[in-house]
Image 1 (cartoon, helix red, strand yellow):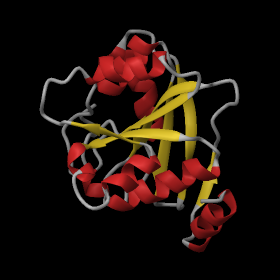
Image 2 (cartoon, helix red, strand yellow; image 1 turned 120 degrees about the horizontal axis):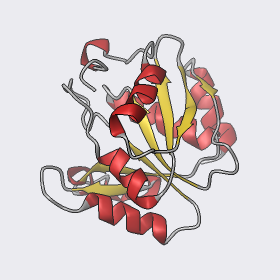
Image 3 (cartoon, one colour; image 1 turned 180 degrees about the vertical axis):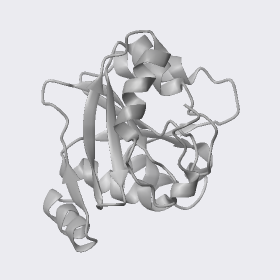
Length: 184
């Protein structure tokens, strides 16, 4: 799909993009929040496409079993067997090691439902792969999506999470009752 078409569709939906991936960053774990609706995926994917960021994304393996499995693979989907010990950190690290350019999107909430805390996998992947964390967002209060700060993981999860949490304060989810920052 051309960037022009994607940009036109986003604009017609009332959305705009804000922030880009710095050109010197060739690899990153991109966290995307808030994630409370299927619409987040659609708007988020279009936002990355307009920003010319060719993403891969972790998504539950069940979506690859139906008629649209080929579609999610074509868009950059990487199947994840949720609830299993599957060494996902090592698998994604190997993808980073084998690539010159790679942007992997992870929703730290892990689901569209309300959670009490974010999963730590995004941080562990970035730390093990020696890549930064880019904070991407979808904000329904002003219909904007994009890329915010780039965090270099220090190894101190709690300290780095405070910086990440501060960025997401004030971002409005499609379903605000499902977005939890207090449990980070």
